[in-house]
Image (cartoon, rainbow, N blue to C red; front, side, top):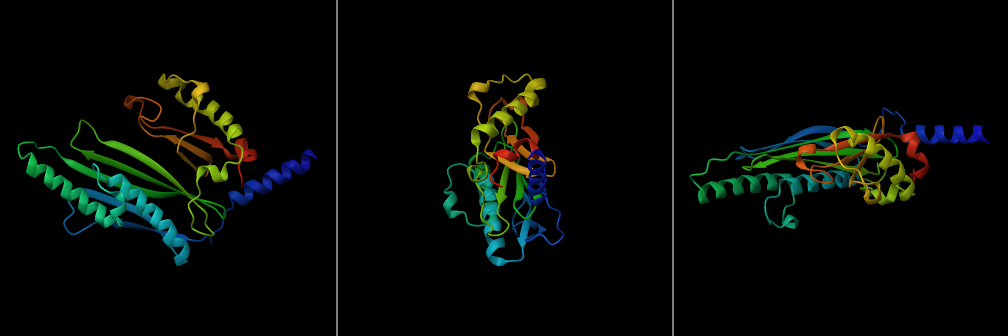
Length: 236
């Protein structure tokens, strides 16, 4: 019985982490800008291949970038493309300079995306944005997006974690170890999973952005759980 369980586990791991040169969709790296852009740098992975799949993936990536570049109370629903978001960011800066001509504060934004992991079951993409609108410091934010390669549909965390309490128990122990050296007060009773959970070659990666569970000085908290430690709690 134990032998069969071991074989089953190995089979599941191989299925999720299969190496296949023909994995679809494929991705190309693109740079997006506009003619009058002087402030924003955007570099993203673009899904190519099956249009019905790729368009869904690219749409979710673009929405995440648009949200990252949004300033103030703009209506994000009207921002349909990355190019529009870049234009609006530059326009906001120009308006600020017009309203406060004696204040010389640099604005900048950098957004970089990468495919962290790809298999026949899941694609994990990370979007890292740094935005500075003239404050004491800019803010770096990282977003993980998980996709079903067969449909292009974004997979929400509650769709692939089938035993949340079991997964949380393992994750809490890894977080406690990750923050130990930073002096962050860890309270297991109040532990919550982060919004950003994805996959990399080492396992399941969990990430808390700045201010999410600790002060700015702590920065981003990130740790990886080996896939075999949480396989029993996943829907894959």
